[in-house]
Amino acid sequence: MRFTSCCGGAGAKTLVLVGKAGNGKSATGNTIIGRRVFESKRSLAGVTSTCQLETATLSNGQIINVIDTPGLFDSSVEPRLLATEIAQCIKMAKDGIHGVLLVLSIGNRFSEEEASAFASLCQIFGHEIADYMIVVFAHGDLLEDNQCLEDFWGPNCPQLLTDIMAMCGKRAVVFDNMTKDEDKISRQRKELLSLVEAVVKNNGGKSYVNYLFEALNMSEMDLIDQTSEVTCSEKSHEGKKFHIKYEEQFEQLIKMVELRLGECIMRLEKQLAEERVARLEVELKAQAAQTKSKEEMIEMKERLERAEELSKKLEEKFKNAENQSKEKASETIWSRMGCIIM
Ligand SMILES: Nc1nc2c(ncn2[C@@H]2O[C@H](COP(=O)(O)OP(=O)(O)OP(=O)(O)O)[C@@H](O)[C@H]2O)c(=O)[nH]1
Ligand SMILES: [Mg+2]
Image (cartoon, rainbow, N blue to C red):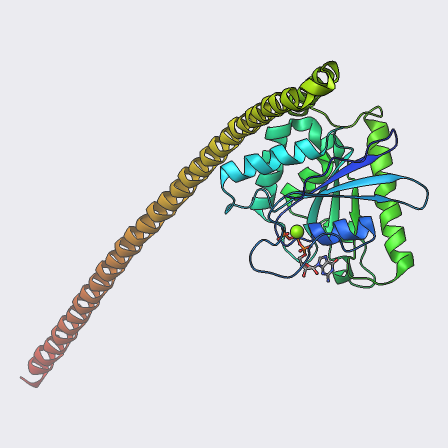
């Protein structure tokens, strides 16, 4: 874990990158910072394994803190590890979060896993987190020449993504993290930062700080207040004590996140169980319909066979009757002819 506190100052903005492993979070972070500070590479396994904070001062003096995270809601991540990373992220974003960048990839189909990761974020941090979210479509270079973002997530967009976009106030940008064109890089960054400004304005200038953050910030304030009261000679001893207290409180924070994660997992399991039951019902219905149609087919076949037998019998009867009437007719002729001869 590379732990540094966010650079403060009234205008400093803290952005957190979230999203599925491999979607391009770290690459997006590098584009925002303007240097290759986060490791970003093609890999089958997750590349970023712990949260990392980096800071940049833009040419206009604006301080930007960017927190890169691992693919937190990937199913392979252990709940305890997930809770620790979320808690570390909260610890890093001391003054709260000004923007949560949900990184999706234009190169990948939007999955249900991503939708449930979004739901988990809302469950852990509260639905208000969506008010701070901006969707970043990485791999922007994959867009066709005449294709724009609206075309991409427009009419054929999966419903789950449309819902997420609506919850995020349709704030979205496209990022081509591979471009070497400085103008393009600066345009992309500007577009994103203007959305961050809009988010901050919409939220009354406040960063996102929920009770999870408050729990940690309060403990830090306690630490600062109490440490300032002790004399220099006492400081190292007291400092150690407060450090232990702080660590204890941090452990409590992890437990709080774990509790919420537990709720998330329960919700996901319930959802999964419900989906399984619904799928089973559909399968049973399909099976019943198949059996019914098989039975109907057999019945129809039998009916057809019976009808064919009947028509054969009728044909035979008709032939017999015809033969009989022919025989009768010839008998009559012969008997009449006999009468005439005699
Ligand atoms: N062509 C293209 N490739 C990109 C873009 N953004 C990221 N990539 C590539 O996608 C791969 C994954 O990018 P990362 O930034 O490591 O993705 P991540 O989300 O941080 O992945 P984890 O750390 O594993 O969670 C790398 O090979 C990047 O070079 C982009 O805009 N265009
Ligand atoms: Mg990464």
